[in-house]
Amino acid sequence: MENLKDSIQQYYDDTATIYNTKHGVDLYGNTWGLKKYYLPLFDKYIPDNLDMLEIGCGTGKYTEIMNKRAKKVIGMDISDNMLDMARKRVPGVEFIQGDCEKLDMFEDGQFDIVYGVNAFSYFPNKEEALKSIHRVLKKDGIFMLIDVNGPNPVYLIAYMIGRMDIDDWYSYLRKNTLKYLVPMLENGGFEIKHKDIINWIPNALPKSIVLSAIPFDFVLSRIPFIKKFAMRTILVATKN
Image (cartoon, rainbow, N blue to C red):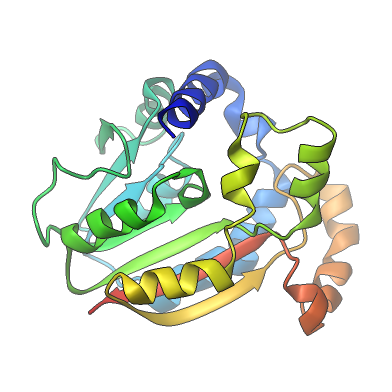
């Protein structure tokens, strides 16, 4: 497991300067998904003017959004180079380098909100990470998880043709399902408030393809058997 963490850290240190393009963070596919799915979710479940922690903040895309609504947001990531990019993107925000499974530097009940976008699937020790998240949240604090959905065929195909960027990640990614995550959170002292599987449009698609694909996302998202293979898993939970 430590080898996986070393590989993750090395990969993101090496690709930090091209990450936003390589992974589509600032491309139209992600911009569309943000407006269609993420911002309404934030508006519904994350109140303004609270203390927030982002785990796996990367280059600061979502830190920038939350910084406009939070009393204070802290971003944490395993990669120093990714954090260098985040500091340029969101000056004045506190960013901390460290293992996001271990939140020992934070006090009990320090945060109202802990959230992660495309981060939790990288954690080999998910139960330990949840214990840390539970500890640093206030009573009734909110944990929001937006992440890859393991059954999506894109990830399996990438694995089969050797296009996974990080060795061994798929063995953890494929477990990232509601069936796996919901009991883990409930057993870890959380109450599920919202769960969903969303979005058939990859982040890195250009505008012309996204606009053509929107009707397919609309249709596929309404067919239960097919919907479970969409790209993103959503969970919102409160600390018991």
